[in-house]
Length: 272
Image 1 (tube, rainbow, N blue to C red):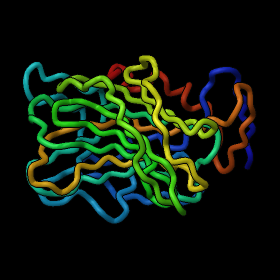
Image 2: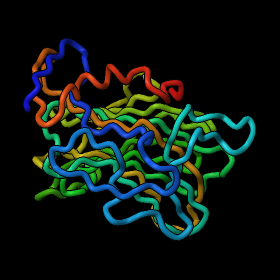
Image 3: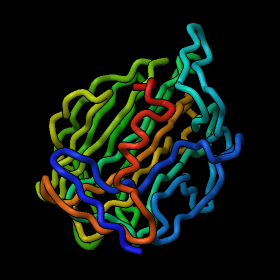
Image 4: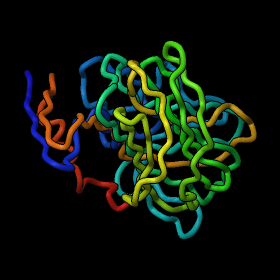
């Protein structure tokens, strides 16, 4: 069934990823691979792999930072990533490759907290990927809380390579909650970041190709020196067609484009 959705001006687009963890069981994150056309994707896709060694990814209820003042991370369920020793954290929030977006704009968003009870010792990688799982844009959270955005350009085939000097974004303070959005404009080949609905950052190039964008991956790498605890919630990916006034045909599901507006007051909004 085709549903015609009309948007005017600055209205948002079709919600393709919408993960708030409320329909997931408490405990270790489940493994779900998305199927083509089954939108929006409502759970992480761990691709037959899960955190191992000294790393865990756990769905918890009413998460709060572990040291005083025990700052809450909103109400309801969220995903907590924790690393105490060598081990991998690799959590994709991705579409089926057949649903990749390669035109207009893509907006990826999520709520995030660095726990103030576990001193981070290592980097967290937030990498947007294309349908061939090549990285098209990098955000890097360093040990000191500094967040950077690095550019990428497309190379032969689906490959990408880094480009230019990373942009330094506002630092994330341990124990505080943030809403982070990254926008990708296929017309210009530029990406930018907004934190807590603030103004956009300076722009960086991203690797524009026919492989499009399918979502992003949060990872830490295996290193035994990386430790820390991070909370994630309200993960979204939206596709916004070209132009300020447009019509969008969505197949197989109804009113996806309107769900962003309907959910504007959902749980976790206080995290911003």
